[in-house]
Picture 1 (cartoon, rainbow, N blue to C red):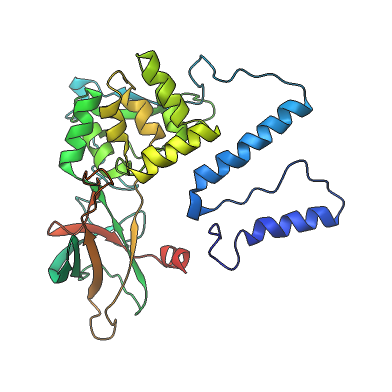
Picture 2: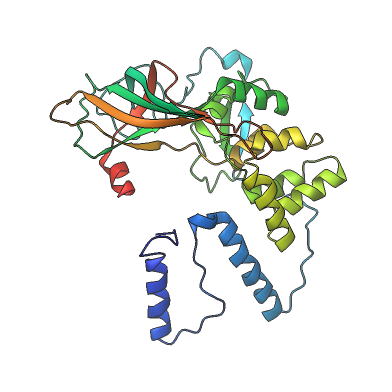
Amino acid sequence: LGNSMYTYYNACGKLIDRILRKHGAKRFYRLGLGDELSGMEYTFLDWQTGLVNQLMDYFSLNVAERPNQLPSSRLYRSVPVERHFWKKTKYFSGEPRFIGSYSNQVPPFTADNPFLAPVQVNRELHKSGTRSCRHIELDLRGSGLRYETGDHVAVLPWNSEALVNRIGMLLNIDLDHPISLLAVDSLNPCQQPFPSPCTYRTAFTHYVDITGPPRMNTLRVASHYAKDTKESDRLYLLGSSSPTGKEIYSQWILEQRRSIIDILEEFTSLAIPADVLLERLPRLKPRLYSISSSAQVYPDTVHLACAVVREYTPAGNPVLGFSLFNDRSMTVTTSPHQIAITH
């Protein structure tokens, strides 16, 4: 488990390390332990920096502090769908795997084929300041889904229309233009970052996280697309693993709760292509909620108790968030595999 608060913190990695040392292996560099409490990427980069420096010393290498070339790690590129094919092509509209599964709901419902559950009840239980505790009831009739008391339900969130319109304007793209993802290396294709063909609007609404803190490697890549030298250097520093870069990233990105939208607004000379950003942004993941109802009393209804919070940064700006429990229907799925992951 990658959290230093847990009893069995990185138990598997520590076990392998002990076995290797027992059989005579000599450690070249310290054991790296990923800690979600401090930020997994942040912890990894700190470990990676020391490892790279030690490798450079061992092999007597001298690498420039900052490469001038764009990184050549692109896996996919987006190709616009020609206009005369628009009406003939089927597009994903947020489905995780099967195209058309939202418009034509057919069981069995799984993580790859979610059930669109009508929201029967969305009632506020109590409110305290910027926090609202709500009682949610989801209708499972006709789905064939069954649950046991204490199970979890996975809710597929989406980014708000206002935020999607905002990022579309900042990237200067037509959000309703359909695109397809093609592997850069056709002989060695990797798994697509999200389903396609779909429109830019669908991709930014349902498939990528535009509200969380941007990853440090995303900022490093973005630095190559900033036309202003000072902005480019600042972006690279934010994404670097240097002590100064990590300190600024922690204070300016993490503490201030900045998102990729804030980055695009702050760095006005940044002209990163939309397909580069779509490949770099993390996938929007389902949110797990504990079921508070009894399966024996409410076999066809799932009850949830959740908090809707309006948060602000230290500077007083509202924190950007995704949309949940603000519509009459939402995408949900229950799965033994997802439940197992939470335990």
